[in-house]
Amino acid sequence: MLTISQQLVDAIVAHARADHPDEACGVIAGPVGTDTPTRFIPMVNAARSPTFYEFDSVDLLKLYREMDDNDEIPVVIYHSHTHTEAYPSRTDISLAGEPEAHYVLVSTRETGTEDGPYEFRSYRIVDGAVTEEPVVIT
Image 1 (cartoon, helix red, strand yellow):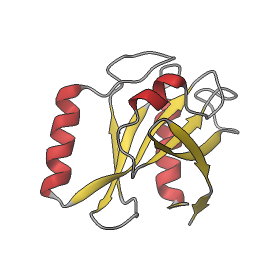
Image 2: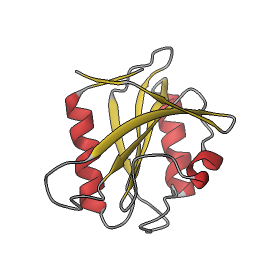
Image 3: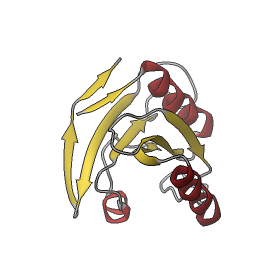
């Protein structure tokens, strides 16, 4: 189960809407030894694509060094889908390399950059197996 604050959900959705029609991506870090997302880190989609996201390798290395210095781990790895439901694609599944992370997807397919309905779902992805999990917003 993912427990996440409304403030962090709002930040993810705002990032997804701002980057629409391209996919948005980022990380929410939290203290080592916890499952608590605390620090929102929006990233640039280096692919600049409406159907694919990719973290810039230099930015990703910098992020992991920063998290290591702060005794943090990637609790949530998020990205958006702009034209499909909030469910991991085959590519998303093949690239999922953090078995302890919550993989959050938000779909902006209905409203794009505008306010309105969106899908917000979380998954665990381990060895290619996708398991949807409940999301509790606090």
